[in-house]
Structure formats: C-alpha cells, structure tokens
Amino acid sequence: MKTKPDPTECDTIEYIAQAKFRNDTCGCKVYGGEACSVKIDLESAFEFREHCHQLTHDELDITVKAELFAHRKSGSHTQSKKHKIKERERPYQEFYFNGIRVCRTTFCFIHGISKNKLQAISKSLDTVGLMPRKHGNSGKAPHNALSVQDRQNIKTFLSKFARDNALPIPGRLPNYRSEKVLLLPSDTTAMDIFEKFDSLAGKMNYRRVSLRTFQRVWHDLCPYITVMKPCTDLCNSCQIFSLKLSATGSINDDEKKQVLEEYCTHISQAKQQRDIYRKQCTESKEKFKLLSETEKTTGNSPCTVDGAFHYSWDFAQQVHFPHHAQQVGPIFFKTPRKCSVFGICSEGSGQQVFYLVDEAESLHVGIQYSMMIAGHTKFDPDWHFGVWKLRWRSSNAESLEEVARTVTTSSRSGHNIPQLVQDEEKPVIFRDWKCYLKQYFKPLKNLTKYHHFLVESTKPGEVLCKEVGDSLPVSVNLLKRKEILPSAEDEPEEIMSKGLDPSRQWYLYDNIREFCKSESSKNNTCPKPTVPKSEMDLTESNQVPNVPCKRKGLFLR
Image 1: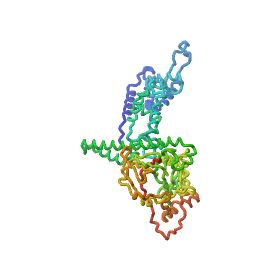
Image 2 (image 1 turned 90 degrees about the vertical axis):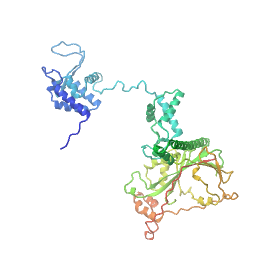
Image 3 (image 1 turned 135 degrees about the horizontal axis):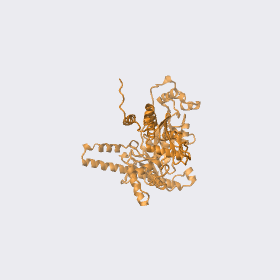
Image 4 (image 1 turned 60 degrees about the horizontal axis):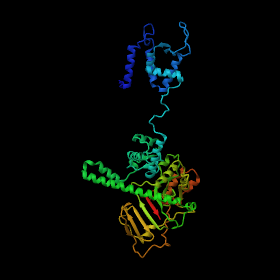
C-alpha cells in the first residue's frame, strides 16, 4: 500500500484556509440572510483558487481585471429605476463566480488575493485599463544609486589594475566557459583589490562604496577580469607549502612560522620575476613605437638599432589533422597525423611566429636570458596560443598548409604568423648545436636554480647568473679553453629529417586516410607507403616522447 507524501508547509497552510472557509463561510447575507459561499460549488472554487496560485503576477492581474470589467458600472451617471439619475461618484462593482453572484470576501478567497490587493487592482483598472500593474518605482533609480561616472571610475580602476597585473587566458581552462578573460594571480583577492580602490577613492575624491557594491559593479562592467582559481595556477612549491600549513596539528609554532616565511619569500620572488617580465615588455613596446614603418615590417641588420627587445617562446600542445569542426565519432579513438606547435613571440610588436612542425620532421651585442618560476609562468605566448585555439576549434584542416591557414585567420590584425618547417621559400634548418657547442663549452653547474643569464660579446664564454631579479650576480666562464673560440663561419652539422616510420605510414593510410575529404589531402597527409607491409613489423612504432619545457624569455640588446 502506497503512503501519501508528507504535505509541505505551504500545503498545510492552504488546507487550513480551505477548511476554515468551508466551516465558517464568508459571513455575508446576500441571499436572504444566507451566506453566498453556501450557494457555490466549493470544490470548483477550491480548484480555481489553486489555479490562481500558479499564475504569475501579471497573469493574475489580467484575470481579476477581466472579471471586474465584465460586471462593472463606471459610466458618468447612475442608471436605476428606483433612484434618480445623478453623477456617479465611484464605479459600482458586482462580483460573480460561475454565473452566481457572490460577495467581495468570497471573490477574494476564490482568487487568492487580499482586500487591499483587490482595491489596488480595481484602481489600476480605472487608470490604465486591462494592462498589468507596474510598481511605482519601476524604471526609477533609487536616490542612493551610483551615477554613471561612479561606475565608470570603478571600471577604469579595474581595467588599469588588470593591465598591470593580469594575463590573458591560454586557451581553454577548467572552470572557465569563456576564453576571452584576463586572469589575476591567485594570491590576489577581491578584498585586496577593493582596499586599493577605496584608498584611491579617498585621494581622488571618488564616491566610496561598499565591498558588495564594488563586486557587483565589477561583475556587471568587467566580467572578463577574474581571479585565477587554484587549478589554473598550480605551482609545486606552493602546493608543498599549502600541505605543510594545512597540517598545523603536527607542527609547532616555530616550524609553522618558518614555513610561512618561506612561503612568503617564494611568492615575493614569483612576483618579482613577473614584474621584471612586465618591465622588459613595456620597454620593448616603447622602443618598437619609435621605429619607422619600414623597420617594423622588413626588420633590421644586426647591431643597427640602439635598444632592447624582448622575445618569449613556448611549446603549445600538439594538434592533429585531418581536423573538422564537426568531428566524426570513429576518429576519436584513432591517432591522426600530428603537428607540433612552437611559438616565438615579440612582445614589442605584439606578433608571434607559429612554427608548425610536421610529425615527419621532427647576431647581437648582448643577450639576457630569463625564466619565470615554474608554476607562475603564464605570459604573452599563452595569449597568442589561446587566440589561435579559438579559431582552431571551429575550423577544418586536412593538411599542414590548412593548419597554417587557421593560424593566419585567427588574428585579423596579423598578430599570429605561421611558419612551416618545410617552406619552399623560407625553410627552417635544424642543426646539431648540442654536439657543436660541446666542443667549446662545459655544462653550467646547478643550472636549475638560476632564472637570469646575461652574456655579452665583449666577454666571450662568460655568463652572469642570478637566482632571482635582486640576487647578486655570479660570473661563470664556460669555455673549456680560453684561446679556442667558435668561428663565425663554422656552422653545426645540419640534422636531416628521418621521416615517418613505415609502421606509422601504414597506420595513417589504413585508419586515417578515409577521414580526409579531398584527394589532394589524402595524398599529402596519408599517402600510400612505398614499403610493403610484408617487409616490416606493423607492431613497431617510432614515437618520440614528449619532453616538457619551461616558459622562457630573451631580452636582446
């Protein structure tokens, strides 16, 4: 036997109201001393009342107005056989339900409204007709509302703060639906930013607002500026410090204080590295503006420009082709042809060159080489990769040339520039620099603890190393023999591409070729191998492991 569910509080209140109306009636004497609620069908009245409860505010207003209008006398003069005709002082209203005249109390109960609400609806019927009622303050701003200038002051502050401290999102990240956002460091809170604005408002005589109002305006006018969530700013050192601090029960106060000091030092160093990066980018942009249009487009010979320019580079995750915006299901479980993407960004010009490496191809006065602290490494190349990924997800590409075309079309202003490794006009040549430099230089000890390196043409072989920006430089000479230097005319041996392994060629031909739509794409991306299957082992595979790379930057003088 099924048990009835427990009634909710609202159901209980409604049940009590209906029972009270059934027992006590409306109390009127419309029908010769008898209450009108006795003459109507109460079950129909209760059902109609429940329907009225389900109506919206505007729907209920129109329903009540329509019934009032049908039984309302509102002419300029009264009309009665028993009384004289005179000017009408107020409308005469009668109430009906299912063709039976009822009193005002019963009418209000059936429609689930109070006497005051009925009077308000009736007054609105005389003034605006059968239109829904509107609140008196509708469309009016409160007396204490922020002005347009007040909101603009907050927006200007947030935009400038984000320009100095935020970085664009590097493509798709968890917890972010939109990719066009600026990420503030995760150690920054809304309270920190509000306190800076509140301090500025006091100095600039701006209107001071509360934290909640500041956050509301932030959300309305600058939703693209947000604070990084922990999953977007992972740092191994930060994670270790957080775990130590979370286990406060197992460490004493002195150890906890030491961990906090080390944590603060780490955050301070990361911020310092970020400030150095911003400063170098700003100097590069200012110097680039001084160049002529010809110098900006054609470039310059070595040592002809007196200034410094900043370059950064990074690896993006590899993409696969053929790629279609509407991807078919079976290819999800296969491995199409791979294209590695390597970007070199010039912060001064705001352009980045995308080096597209197919799966088969795998002169200055001084150079300052800098690296950010691992885990705090979001910078300009991530923005360029993110802009391209927006275009890539909605593009079709069946060959390496079409992948390069998506890079070009991803930026209307020409910020992204593709470069094919096997380009006929400007090919990229790979040389064995490791073996070549090994003849003249020795490895640098404790390399991973340094983040800044400076070399100058006047001091060959000497490197100035710094752990962080404000550390004391350490000079190290890497030459094996000071009298033997590399020759400018001598070049390392060129590394020739080995091409795809035969087993990989047959895999692409048998499994991926069918997903290419055009014959030219099939022949370029998945051509028929020249090595017969009978002469090879299809289970073997020459796959190069992916090697992670830290984010790097060069400051050239």
